[in-house]
Length: 481
Image 1 (cartoon, rainbow, N blue to C red):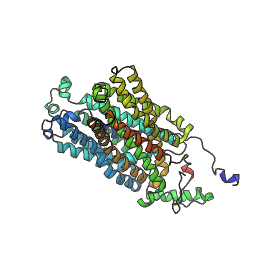
Image 2: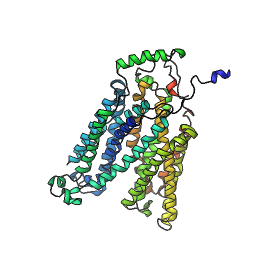
Image 3: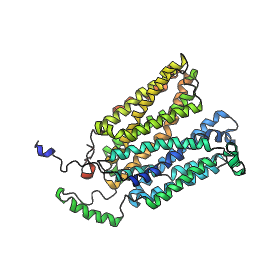
Image 4: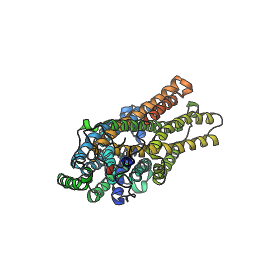
């Protein structure tokens, strides 16, 4: 092969500065989802227990509360693809603004609900009207280029971790204000009748403030029809030397053309990562809370919250300040494969922590194992930033980025709906049947982790600079390969 064939057409560019203000608004919008989805966690069990549907049977609380927690992701999975597809045609801003309004209304409705049906409807409304998560990832891909995409995408897990910390704090601190803060709320019977309304109202208020911020200051990243025609003529002139068809990258593709081999591979691996991650997140509080003799550590609720918050803060800081360096040094595939592989020791540490607690209580060894699990958790979490980047590059063209993200987010939402139920049920099944001393659940998850690690080897090693490449959709080519 002639050495000239391997010479890049365009010299490597220096990193483009991130559009800081636009990213700030976009990440502010993203923060609304983890806050709305998780603000109910501290009080949902007590709220459901106070409703007639349980008949005073505390054993039923977990079932009904778990259903409420899962409904957000179940209903989101039903509509997120369509919202993302619409955003390719009507623009990102209208979808984001609609999603923020939907989240705000659903939170007000949830806080005012006095029946289980009301809670169900409110939670379903939140998921059905919220297509923001896929659209946000599309906008992040459009606001960045190949020189700064790692820096931009690394911020998204940080925001999710932040919302996952703020939401439960608000739900725990602001619930039942009539009794907890009588000097401020004791004079209004409303707060006595609706003890869980305040945290819901606060989050709803945040969504409305974010709505106004996005309405006035967030720029559209999908051009109008006239703008696309102008862009087409400009693209023709700019790319005349490499003979690129002007309309290749400005037309949304049919769904059958979006489902390319590379898109399927990326979404499959992203889904496996999300499934294992949500299984871990569901098992952690259960394992930390349940008594030592039943296979856990017997932590108090504050201790559980402290551990989970510490994991979130540590991961967020690592993503914000170190991920870009690691990404530039090792590339997306090595990081993603390593991320999948870390699930093996993460799940494998659970039995060892219980063993050390059985033979001396929660001691120094137990805390050392817990700390090691936390460090591995940080490494695992880097896989999400790589997954966001892979999805961005897998899109057949820029105008199908919304559809590609919508497909990915639909799969993720399904995994996040079934993952907690599957992992916690398997945990209970392992204990009840005493399979492998109750540790059968971890064996299953370790095997699943190894399968996911094997699957991740199908991902491409390098990502070409998509800003300088256009895919020919008449051929089975890929910017990933």
